[in-house]
Length: 201
Image (cartoon, rainbow, N blue to C red; front, side):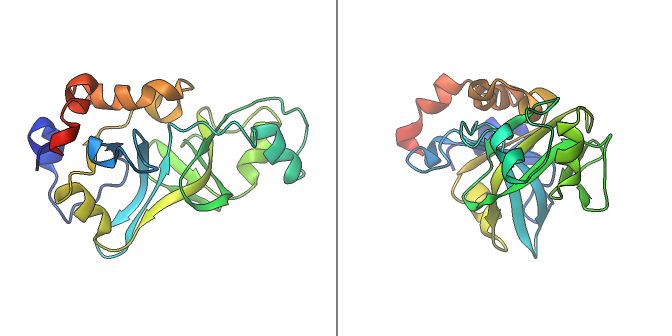
């Protein structure tokens, strides 16, 4: 219960409300787990159906975008445009998801919010490789998922995650190392003060 008082957003959302479109920011409670200091964009959340999200602050050095496009036989190589590639989570790590701005859509696209869309088809990568496609985009390899009630349990009972509003810079920006601090700053939390409470989580 150590961190609930420091996030007004956390206080305003009750269990049962959809968290779709929000950011999950790892608290010190996750310091010894693979999710330490991660920022996850929630792509889908239903109280009865679990949740799915993408880690947006773990740059994946290999495979790079060129490698992925080559494996999928998408040209040209090198592409006319590049986007960041993230380790999106521990589930289906060989499957790619493109999170992007809603100025581009296909039949296989899922509207997350009014400004953000998720696409798992190859069409978006083809357009990006050819120099077009959505204005903002990132490719996530794998994703994070939770069963029914699991994410709520982690947030509201175990203080594993802090909730933060998304921004273009945090979701699509290229400074991956700064995103965790940026997300905390969005909810007026000093990372130094937060990490100093690790022993009390």
